[in-house]
Image (tube, rainbow, N blue to C red; front, side, top):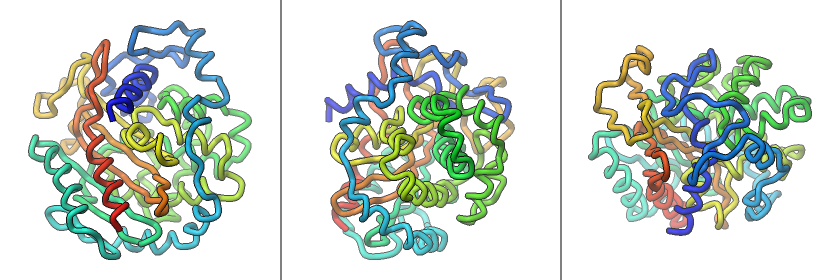
Length: 359
């Protein structure tokens, strides 16, 4: 796993300035660094020139996309018609205090390992909200799934999928912005697309999967839940595995999304489609304790949002079949000027994967 952690540091250096939460005006309110132009990226070893950054970002596919494992196309499609059943299970789960297994049967030992990883974070005073479901067995896990949290940049995954679904021409017209918003979590590219297409594409998806349309109103929804995001990822899964999208260039962008603990820890072994979201919570590049007083310029009037986050969402295609997951936390994303600490979700991601393997 040490090799994968090093990979993460290199990737984060190229993308960490773009993934913060913002408001509908495009400001990155709680971002740990100043908003940059679309051509600027920061590397772990220093700052690339705009020309270098643009050359890297316009390359049709990254090395990681080209090397990503393939998944069984027909098997992935087979779960589309079963997705209403998955949504029903996730909608009905009543998560009491602690971790709840829903749907089918699961290994108690494997579930306990997931709970232990969550406890490591909650014992430090952090909030965790989680929903995960294995599509083959229709078995899942939920932990505090209705905790109001900020989506951070995980919203970009489902919003951009909805845009491509409603406006197929958007890919040819705005290919670079779509790629930068997903792969690099670039806020400028995302906001440019929001300005063009508005909330309607995502509102349609919300209506289809039973999520309140208010989810689509803001560029970075606050006080929404892991259950809401899970429902939208079930729709994104169906879209990315449609005949037109499977193994398309657009779908490949999700295989290389910045700062995803799942992409880093599992992406070399399994095909993944993910989108992370994060905030360090302070203007400085130092680690942030959410129990500190939040500076006035970063407050949004929502007491449930601590203005810091490490979130991850997506799909993992294992040999046992795919599973969809959403992890929301208010753990501060640990960004430093010259290096990045390992993502605090790494061990939780591995525990979730081990849980699915034992089903």
